[in-house]
Image (cartoon, rainbow, N blue to C red; front, side, top):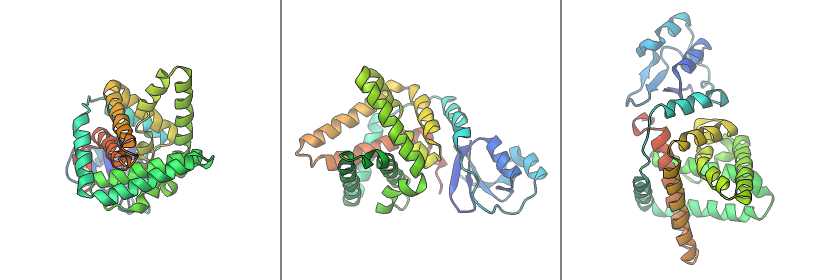
Length: 280
């Protein structure tokens, strides 16, 4: 799997070698386009990768006029298969300890922005508009947390990125996951619990990997299924910590909410983006 730097300076991927070859053939990437092999620390031009020599020789094109097409539903199966080829271990304790350290290091901005989103979610839940903005709000919060984890510049605007980066897909993800999880909980409880855990990463896969809502839900489900019980433990611990926050006069929730949210995003980052594959 590879990441590509588009003409807009933003990373795209991870995608397969075949997808990179398609971008070369379409003139969206050339010999000077910077790329990174998954697991590597450095970025190199595509001309430095022998596996793309034939594609570059067959297609001589000027620098790409725009960013490569983002990975969408077509790449969802390949993305899930790639991660399922190798096993992984979910370090629940590490996720929470790193989340707490991050919150302590920038306490008031993180707690303040998270509190704002929590208030918006609670306020919108009592109106029909809540079904429309649930996905974009949660996706934006995940995006804000991911930028914090990646040590990228982040501010309150990032939590509203779900309305500008992937509004439709996040809205649909929110509607469909909420509907199916609710049906599962009402019918037999256990199916609902299964779906709550299986779709933990649907929102970040939409906003971070640029997947459509259904492929994002499927990638999340397939990858989490490998160690579903571990993720159930992570999910259960987030619920218990937030319950403790509620019991502490409700004020504790303003601290446990960002800590648990960051813990989930650390799990996502460990699973889908190794530390070495991040953009410098």
